[in-house]
Image 1 (cartoon, rainbow, N blue to C red):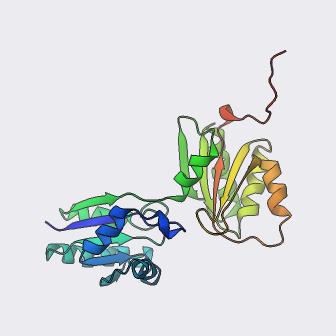
Image 2: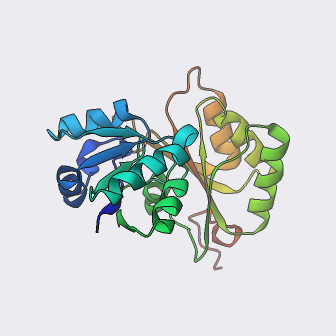
Image 3: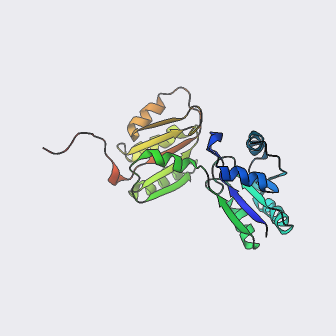
Amino acid sequence: MAVLYIIGTPIGNLGDITYRAVETLKNVDYVAAEDTRHTLQLLNHFDIKKPMISCRAQNEKYAGEKIISLLKDGHDVAYASDAGTPGVSDPGEVLVDLVREAGFDVVPIPGPAAFTTLVSVAGAGGKTLIFEGFLSPKSGKRKSRLQELMDTGNAVVIYESPFRIVKLLTDIADIDNERRIVVGRELTKLHEEITSGTAGDLLADYSSRQSIKGEFAVFISGVKKIKFSEESTDN
């Protein structure tokens, strides 16, 4: 029986793609993609030529029906979002549900994700980690949800654009100016930057920058894991 493969693709550095992902892309009959132009660059880099299907948030149900038709005809299909793992702040959930309901297997091909990349170098994660993805662009809803997340006392990871990163840092500092955060900008890419400190420190840093570019992942530590001083408290 034909299979739908969910492919994790690099979030920046093409060297992060797995051997299994490359082999899967080579062996399937069709490649579905959130943005065919973007995924075509990835395929060209590895000299892979496959018929492509557009499957983005705006047409995911329609594209899903087309993919199911291909699966019924015995064709294996791979699906890739622009970067990272489909279904993680990217399209893919609707497609997976449709295909599974149609009786076909859905096989994950693991790969990079910005939130796990940042968490791996953030420290102080604790046992519980909340992945929220993008908050609402509306200031009231954004800050209200942020308050709820920070009130849990657990570590939180949020995605943000360069256009709203200062607003996000302002909201975090307003809620808890001393909360430890780690900001990852352009993770795995040429201009990767990882900065850490209190919310107030990072807000001051980014507020002073004349130009902010790139995509962001922000780690907010849990309250029980905060350590700002290297000095021992022993007397």
